[in-house]
Image 1 (cartoon, rainbow, N blue to C red):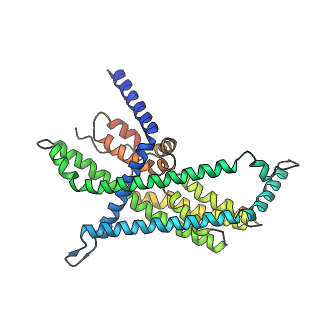
Image 2 (image 1 turned 135 degrees about the vertical axis):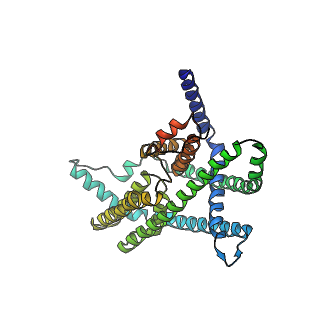
Image 3 (image 1 turned 90 degrees about the vertical axis):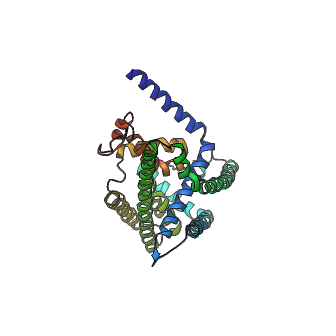
Length: 347
């Protein structure tokens, strides 16, 4: 019986993975719409919470304020990225000579007499094909954005009646309490994760911008935005947030001091934030094994790309909470946890 159950679980997992990969184009907009709805709803809760005497901001006004704040944030980020991408393209010829000099120095250090030129390194890349791919990707992003906004809008409509539907579905049974308990725990843990991650990402990006602006690194605002988003990607994001700006300093400056300052100062900021401050603030709210986090990063990154890397931790948190509430899957939840301490199953 145990072997049959294991075989059944293997089939279910394999079928789920296939559907996630095959249905990527259909699922990703829905997932992104869910994420956008959740972020706006969580921000609306924060805006609605403060009271002035007995007065409280009405929920519709809090939602409007949250939507405006989120739209403004996206506009600022998009404006910053687009301006800096244009500036990078304009400054590319200036960096080419410095990059070629670094290639020559590296070749000389390893004993290669004639170093390849930049054009030789990239001669197999078709500019027309590259621009065509970028244009197609941009068109895809624009089209997906519209679908994501539609999904988010309908989720706000559905939110009004969701609790009532649960009560009707589980009427005269004890399952409603269990479902509400699971949803409340998921909501609480995910909100803690988003709040702490966002706060630390803002602090990290501001500190990184201060360091890069003090040194004079080009496009410091752009890299600060990238540091903010990299912070949400476990492990790999921290590495990219350190390495990417540091490598730019190698191309921009003729001496190693800026490179070393960016590497060690921003590296120290990232390490302290991710490995000291964040665990202290999170506590046991995210009881995920570090090995599970790394494995989920690889798996969800392979399935859904960059979006999967951003969402891997929230997805695993939801999975851990759901699995912990059932006797059959409780051992799996224990394996996914960091210390084996998960809530006892309710059935």
